[in-house]
Image 1: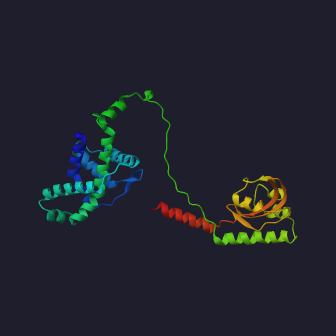
Image 2: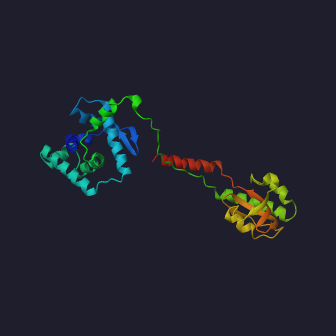
Image 3: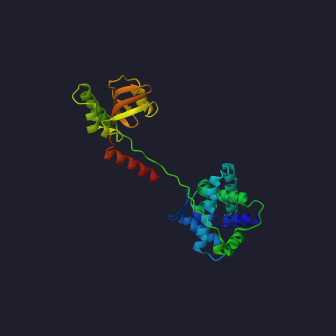
Length: 300
């Protein structure tokens, strides 16, 4: 706790640093938390109070804090708005006292006090979260992080156990939707094929061999033998098991596309049938729009 109190005291003394306007850039990202150039600069100023400033040490310090924030998310550790407001007010009172008055502080920053508080609110909240995670991790332990680091570094490298790497990933999938126009074209095409079979112009087996897009049956003239209920998708079963031998179904839709069926024979609970499938096509324009949407979300 003494370490944490000292850390808070140091932060209080360098608190005004972020009020200066600088061009910022992202140096690294830990989880959802970016490490900015200004974060490194602030850490350097903090280290300057206790040791010779070093960019690597400053980066390590900021990385450690961001890792604590990731752990806070993982453990659902939070600080309330009231707690943040109390800490902000305490720090504002400290700096007002240093400047001599609230008006002098506002004149120095060129901003009203409430604006200054709002600018520092995210930083204060992150600091409080980090400290709360540290308190949970350390508990009653009297070991300091530097002592733990010294102990680990003293262990011979060949004595350390090998631990397989683990990654926790998140991803978003954008599925290209089939356009209404593509569905309409597929329905029109398969309806024409069905009419040719129904009018006796072409046989079902010939049409399936020439035009069906079902890879499992097209080469066999669309033939499926001994089809049991539940073998196909529910929409397929609902149509197939209502047909009479020799009957041709109407065109119907499933998640695969558009179909029509000709029942050959029924053997108890099993069916022999022929089946023609036409799959609506995804256009290059549809793919482009989906990629454009994914890119826009990526850039948020």
